[in-house]
Image (tube, rainbow, N blue to C red; front, side, top):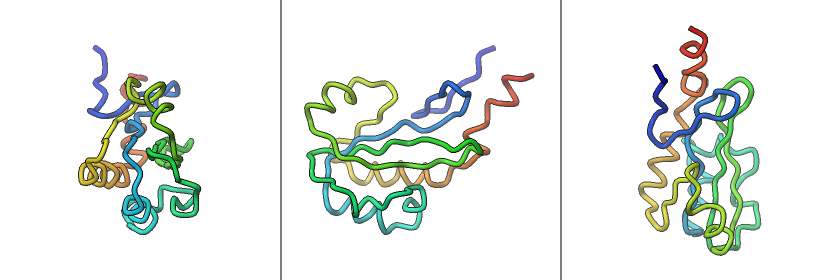
Length: 126
């Protein structure tokens, strides 16, 4: 029986379950929220408000450490790049200008840990 992957998540090549990366229209309010809200800012090694984020869209890449802890990195992307590589990518969640859903999603991601990312390890070995 195949194990079911949670909604809005992917299984990477190492067997970890991670949430999909996201793309949203860039705004100073979102960058400030990412940099100051305690529920998400700990996931970033770099502080989003110190980066050069002057393009039209903001992409948040979501990854994990070997221990299974989730981390994020932010970078700005042009609309042309996003149309070519992100909008049709099944590993991306596109929010356009839905800032409230974006905040809700990243707050959920911030609550996840190794118990979530490693959930299929035991099942795969049974």
